[in-house]
Amino acid sequence: MPDRSSELYYEACRLMPGGVNSPVRACQNVDSLPLFIDRASGSHLFDVDGCEYIDYVLSWGPMLLGHADPAVTQALLEAVPKGTSYGAPCPGEVELAAAVIAAVPGMEMARMVNSGTEATMSALRLARAVTGRDKLVKFIGCYHGHSDSFLAAAGSGVATLSIPGTPGVPDHVVKDTLLAPYNDIDAVEELFREHGKEIAAVIVEPVAANMGLVLPVPGFLDSLRKLCDTFGALLIFDEVITGFRLAYGGAQARFGIDPDLATFGKIIGGGLPVGCFGGKRKYMEQVAPSGDVYQAGTLSGNPLAMAAGIATLKRLRTENYESLQDRTAKFAANLAAVLAAKNLPVQVPTIASMFSVFFNENPVHNFSEASASDARLYTKFYKQMRERGIYLAPSPFETGMISFAHSEADFQKTLEAASAAKF
Ligand SMILES: *Cc1c(COP(=O)(O)O)cnc(C)c1O
Image (tube, rainbow, N blue to C red; front, side, top):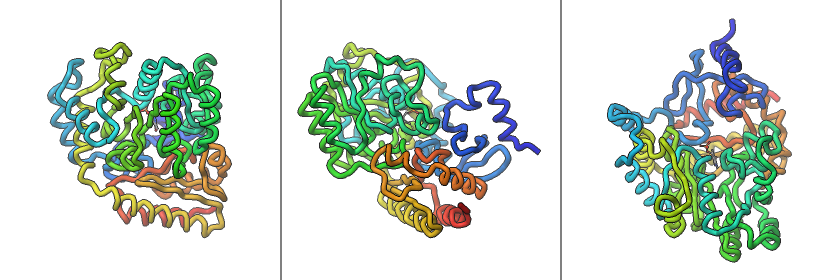
């Protein structure tokens, strides 16, 4: 008998390209069909066939408190009867902006948008406007959403599907996107030597989480800050994943680096569609209507999204990030040990509440090393884990996410499943 997930998937394929609204979800790369989810609670997902899974995707990052956190749910229940959108200012916008600005050291002003993609494309427009320059430095394998300028060597989804960039992006747009390997400061220096006067900004994931998990080597982020200062370019931290996950104040708090602009999304919306860009007042004041750099959105600052974001940040302020990092590190080490005991080449890098599994002999510092991992082993691992109720990202180029709702029993069950897997 066909299961309900497959039935829905085949119906969806007639109605939507590839049956999904975002490509990696289709699970093509791991030779599987997607699961359709009925509901989620804490660290667990329940699919439409009634199967239960321990969730290490967490909607790709937003659900740091776990699914359906009671405080977030309550905030939404209170907000819904007051109307779902006004297209006029509401108090929640002021409250969420204040919370983000108070939390993140480099933020002096913020603008709410509806997705991470909108946040990064708007930050880039602003950087180009204030510098009067067009070029952008981005790192191979870093993902900054799906707007044209960022779709050169864009990591995760694009890498998963083996699309080099994408058709439909004009050459004249990506010609202004200069690429360097992650963690390679010499390559960035070279780009600045050649194009220094034309570079508007360097954008970076301060911890790369869209080529699997790749940590910055000591000095890398510092050197980017210095190079930008020397050449008059803006440093943009894309904190759409790291914001409120690496620490409450994000990567800039954790690493003590002061970017000019930063972008947020995922966690700050508590699972509703939100993004945010912001940074130094002198730059943000150039955004319309205080300045002339146009940026707008019908649903920006949406009252439900603000309510979920405010409730999420309020809860996170008092959560113990150190303890979650310690528990994650222990879990990652145990997972690495279980897989290494099967004579598999394996790396399980981890920081804060993130980890990833590279089937690779050597530690991974950049996208080409990540790509050298054994994708066939990952597919075998993914399928067997899913059969045993463990929901991992359907791609080795994504990062495993852990929430404050994950229990020791969840970790134990996950390790047992990994232990039972055959390769
Ligand atoms: C997810 C992500 C984005 C894009 O956010 P969307 O809300 O999917 O548009 C941008 N940057 C990074 C680092 C991301 O992980």
